Image (cartoon, rainbow, N blue to C red; front, side, top):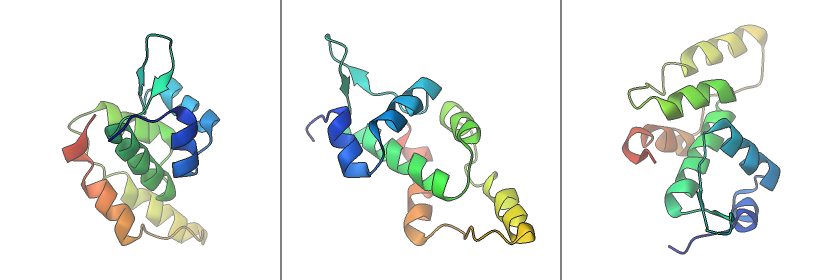
Length: 113
């Protein structure tokens, strides 16, 4: 797959360029850089972004996502239970992830970047 610019990834994912830069600042999405300093997003980066987006939709805060990304032994499912329980108690409309989200989350371990 051809490498993409930050603008192309923003457009295809629906995530703003600013958010992509913020994810990089947090260390949860680390695209390569060209010699001129431009970000280059590969297929693995786009998969990681999709996983980050799925975790956000599940209600995980970015700090938790950061820990999961940085710890190869992390169990991605462990933080979800308390979040769903808390939302249920508060009457929050947050719903458990759809099948597609679970598929991305379950593939998390096998696609560490």
